[in-house]
Length: 410
Image (cartoon, rainbow, N blue to C red):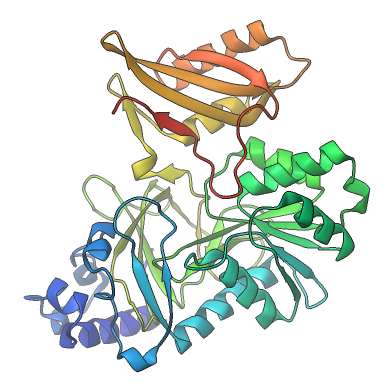
C-alpha cells in the first residue's frame, strides 16, 4: 500500500519530535538522520518496534509528553511477562473516541441504539473504549463488563439492548444460554460487535443464527489506542482501517520485508497522531493481508483481511507448524462438527501426541465424524491427531479470550 502525502508529513513530524525528545525513541532512533527520511522506502528501512521493547520501557519509558499532559494509562491484557503501560493525553482519548464512533456508524448504529458492553473495564482498553465511542455517537450505553450471565441477560431483556459488544467466546456463551433458557423472544439484539480474538466462520454463523444478529469485526490493540482502529462493514469483506490516524504495512514475518498487497504477512502499525506514546513500525504479531481495490460499501478507507491468527499462536509438532486458523477452516467444512475445539499437545514415551477435542451435534455419528476429522487434519495440517468428539457445551466457555491450544510438553 502506498503512503499518501498527509501520512508522510505526519510521520516525518513525529519522527523529528521523537528523535529530539528524551524518551524511548530518542535511543531507538539514535544514529538515524530523520531529516534524510524523504520517501516511503526510506521509512521502511527504519527499525521495527517490538513488544519486548515496550516491556523494557516499563513503567513509563514510552511516555513522550510531560506528566501534566497525561490523563490516563492503559495496560495490555496479557497475563505473562512485564506489563506494557501506555499513557494517553486528552487528545489521544478524544481521537480514540472519534475512531470508535466511526466503527459504530459503519455498523449502522444511531443514537436510538442501546449498546450492551460486556468487555472488561479497568487497565484493559476494551470496556471503556466501547463506552466512549457509543457515548460520542449519542447511543445509550449499558456498561455491564464481563461475568454474571444471569444479570447480563436480565439487563438485556429489561433494557431492550439492541447491540452486543463482546469477545466471540462470550457472545457464544450468551447465545447458548439464551437458547437453553428459551428467552430468544425477549431479546431485542440486532447487531453484534465482536473483537479481541480471532474466530472462525463456523463460530460466526453459529452466533449470528442463535442471536439473530448481524455481526461485525472490530480491530485494535492496547498498544495502538485499543479496539476501534478498524471495523468491518455490512459486506463482511475485511476491516476498514482509519488510515488518517494510523499507517499500516504487512511484512514477511521472517524477513521483515514489506509484501505486496493481497499477500499474507504480519501487520505492522505506525501511529500518525498519537501523543502520549507514539509507536513507529510496531509489529503486532497479527497475520493478515491488505485487500486491494475499493469496497462495495463505498468507504474510502483501506481494508485488511479478517485476522487469521498470530505469529506467536503457532505451535510446532513433529516439525509441522500449526495455527488455530487451520483447525477453524477444516472444521468449517465438516457437517455435524461445532466451531468449538481444544488441542492438547503432550510428550509421552519419547514422542509428541496431539489430541483434538471437538464438540459435535447430538445426532452426529461420532465414529464417522472422528474418522472424517482425522482424515481432514492429516490432509490439511500434515499430522495424525487423536480425535475426541464431545457433547456441545462440554468444553469450557470464556467471558474473555478463549484458549484453544494447550502445549503440555514444557
